[in-house]
Image 1 (cartoon, rainbow, N blue to C red):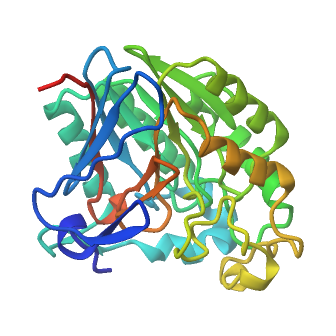
Image 2 (image 1 turned 180 degrees about the horizontal axis):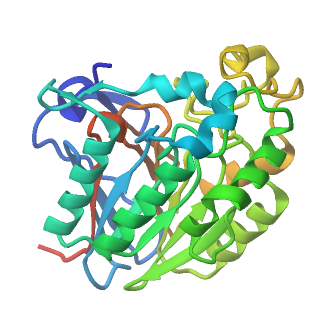
Length: 335
C-alpha cells in the first residue's frame, strides 16, 4: 500500500475548480450567511476553520480507516467471515516517509500526536476495525481511556461487517454494534448523537450502509434548527460531482448497477432502485444548512476536499498508513 501526501499528490476542489495542491496554499470559502463569515484553510494534514460563530479555539484530531485486525481465540468461530480483512492491512507503507508500518503503530502514534497537541477531542470516523474483533475493540478502548481525551466514534462499513455472514446490512450493523462496538458510543445512540464543546456541536451520524434513515434525517433537521455552529462526522463521503461511487451517500448513480465489490466483500448487492428518498432529502438538507461549518469523513483512503454549495467536505487519508487530520476551529478576527 502506497499512500500519498495530501499536498504533494492530491488535488483540492473549490467552487467547481480543480486546483493543484501546493505547500502553504490557502483555500478559503465564505458562507452565504448574513452577518457571519467563515473560512477554511488547508496545509497538508492541518485544517483550520475560522468563523465569527466560534468563540474559543478547539483542536480535533480526526482518525479514519485504521483497519485494526488483531484477534484472539474468541475470534476463531468467525474466521470464515474475517479471513480476508484480517490479512488486508497487516503491513502498510507510511504516507509521509514510505517506511514499513502497521495499523497498531499508526493508531498509537496518532493518539500520541493528539496528546502532544493537547487536542480537545478525538474524532473516530469509521473503519477503525477491519471486522468486529473483540480483542481489537478492547485494545482501542484501553488506549482511549488511558489517553483521557474526549472522543466520538461513528462506525464505518467494516467495523461491524463479517464478510459472508447472512443478513441485511442494517441487521448486521445492529447486531454487531450491540454485541461488540457498543462501549465506544459511551451511552449515546450509535446511529446519531451530538457532542458539544466550547459552543460548537459535533454530530456523529452513521451512514455506513451508504443510506440515511428517517430518524437520522429528523435528528439532523432538529440540529440544523438550533443555529449552533455544526460539524458533521460521517464515514461514507457525501456525493460530489466528478467523484467516484465511493462518494456514495446521496450519489444518484449509487445502486445495483454501480456495485462492483459485493462479491469480493460477500455482502448483499446495493438495491436496484438506488437510494431512498430519505437519503436524498438528507443530502439536500446538509448542503443547505448555513450553520454547518463542514463535513469530515474517511472511507476512500485518500485525502480530498470538495466544496458543495459553500460547505466543505474534507476526507482523511487512511490511518492504517499513518493518515490523520489535525483540525483547528478558531474565532475569526478581522485584520
